[in-house]
Length: 401
Ligand SMILES: Cc1cc2nc3c(=O)[nH]c(=O)nc-3n(C[C@H](O)[C@H](O)[C@H](O)COP(=O)(O)OP(=O)(O)OC[C@H]3O[C@@H](n4cnc5c(N)ncnc54)[C@H](O)[C@@H]3O)c2cc1C
Image 1 (cartoon, protein in one colour):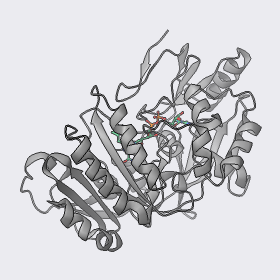
Image 2 (cartoon, rainbow, N blue to C red):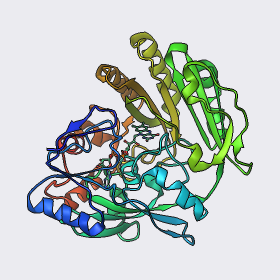
Image 3 (cartoon, protein in one colour):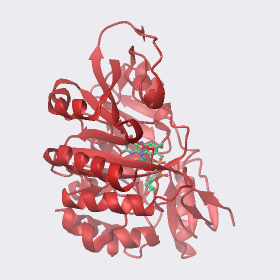
Image 4 (spheres, helix red, strand yellow):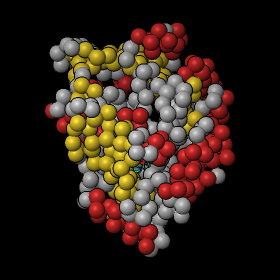
């Protein structure tokens, strides 16, 4: 049996087979064939989730042969991509047609379908997560049939499928709202934690994108702003940053948005991230800062602090509330469970909802109270996949309980 593992190596599985369909019709026949043999089905993007979302002993489907731009509709400012397209493959073809994604996360290696399915996000108080950019999807259902889903065609199904972790079916195509292509001016700098906290509200309000990383061993932050500009592409300041924060501080520069958003993450780690109501962000990060200094002084990895606008996907962690997301990290291979469990307890004090792709130990019994539209999501799931063809033990835990 083939062996599969996620990016950080924390999840391993032995699917009975790995299918790489090269057309939508082939994808439909893989799903229908699995149903005929009573096999479970999971779909994987790039395997960058830290939890066993993609683990299965049934059929694991990769859409690495279903990639690329399908079409752009300039009148509606939308672009349709094959669902297996990696985010890094989207920027150039969009720019060639004068468009760009409105926001991206820290890296661009995820498949677009994998990213939207866990509500992956960047930073910016007026910018919602990637699933909110969807205007329509094509979804292969448990029996192998395919449906086009949009807010107009089936609002209930659309609001459920946007953040659905592959539990409703396999996305074959995604259509996303895009913006006219834009350049970003990036500035980043280091400053003490308290100085960063003092000016937090002001900086979030004054910039399209603001985020900071706090480095525990030196109690310093790397802060970053990105703002649209019409200036020429280029590097403004080449002075190399020093010390521990080096990897979070780029030279001041201007470039097309899709080249500015992603960073390189070459060292493997595991991660926990929760979204808290935006107003709770400062108190929550202060409590985590204190927790790391007193109880986990050996953890060298930073805390990341970002903002996300509210949206209306049933299972979005940012559902109906402007949010702050806070993430903590530990090197892959080092124990992280106790550290993350302590952080999770802090997040619970501040109304936190976990990132669907990152470490958390809660089950549906607890999660359902955090999501006002939980029952509507469940009704769609049971309508589309009554036999649980797309479930695995992790989804049983977080979606059923
Ligand atoms: C280094 C690193 C940096 C990260 N940075 C960020 C960040 O800045 N912001 C953030 O929010 N998150 C971030 N994450 C988390 C990451 O974006 C999510 O876990 C994302 O879901 C991973 O995308 P993937 O393509 O690897 O999906 P996978 O992990 O492979 O899958 C994620 C989910 O999507 C489902 N899925 C995949 N393809 C399909 C499909 N075609 N149809 C239906 N369901 C599908 C899978 O079944 C699974 O449930 C980061 C993770 C890493 C490792």
